[in-house]
Image (cartoon, rainbow, N blue to C red; front, side, top):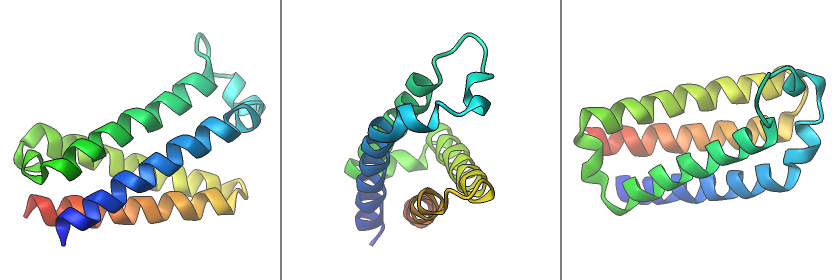
Length: 117
């Protein structure tokens, strides 16, 4: 069961990565993203999703990696960021994205939690 959830989580992150790449220029045109000094917000936002997708793909291939405390910590941080991102999108009325990210967060939490136990 855990292996399947981890695969679903990895697939969700693949979709989120592609979605952020396609819509990235649109959402980073917002002035809130322009305030991040010294960065290209579209690049930072998009690359982060791909990095997390690669982590989840690795974990889905070998769930035993989640027994390592560092991988557990990374999974926990990612889950917190997912829920925070979902809340932010919801707060600003971007509900479709908020729901997709919340589903990804739930898949990740259950998949990682099952693999860690």
